[in-house]
Image (cartoon, rainbow, N blue to C red; front, top):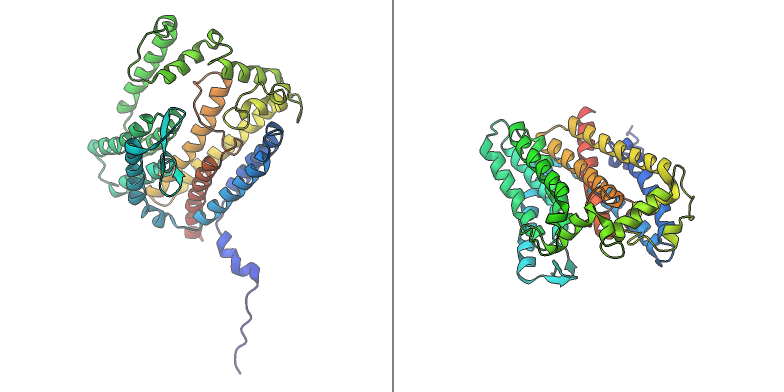
Length: 384
């Protein structure tokens, strides 16, 4: 008598695809995505299709996350060197014959216009995690020097464009890998102390060093202006200080509970510049107040702690370093954006994850989430 084989149901056939999918990470992302859609609906009220485009970008990021989550971390490691070399090569091409817009040379036409610096947000931590994986068990000080050089080349090329915001994100991603790899504290403390001294001198002698005609040499004029505007935005309230002043007014006017959904006067009377992109946190704060801010910050903290937990449980050094770097990218995005809108950091082009409008940034976030999901999935499959 022949055996009868029953075809498994559709649910059982697709179950392996979702096996090991990190539910806690998904919950954190859904909370932030929901906040982003609500805020975009209000702040983008007169921006045509901004709300629908934002939703489409989120769906695209979700699809990318889902696809990348199916790729094992070992397979991701194979892309590290080629992606890094392609990214650096494109940055060199941008420096030689890139497209200039608004005084910045950041784009290149390769059949379509792209911004190669975005590639390095993912390629940089991949490359450094690959490097330290190869040196596992035999790390020497020279290995950290090589890693620093690998990081310095793209960061220098991006700063030359100039693009301070992206260079900061790439630097943070790379430095987090180097730190998690075991960078000695004696190499961390001196530059931190030097930075604190430099900040203290800038604050203490603001009137002298921000005077007209003083050349900072290492920074472009617009970068010097951003720092000086941060120290005293009231010097040019209708010009360079307008963004910071209006952002702080919107945040303060929200009070404890906020003015309510669609009730933000600073937002709807168009006092907040870039209210759907870099300064969307000001629009959110005005309508949802301190209570909404605390809830949003808690959601980001939940996402970051979940990412660090995935990094701690990762099965290999490569996946551990990569997960840590991806998590720190989310932290840097959120911290820098909220800091600049609140007036405690200079204004740079860094969006608020899942809240700000922007297709390129959303794709990068989707890639980062996919990598975290892939590492979490690999660990769970090993345990099962």
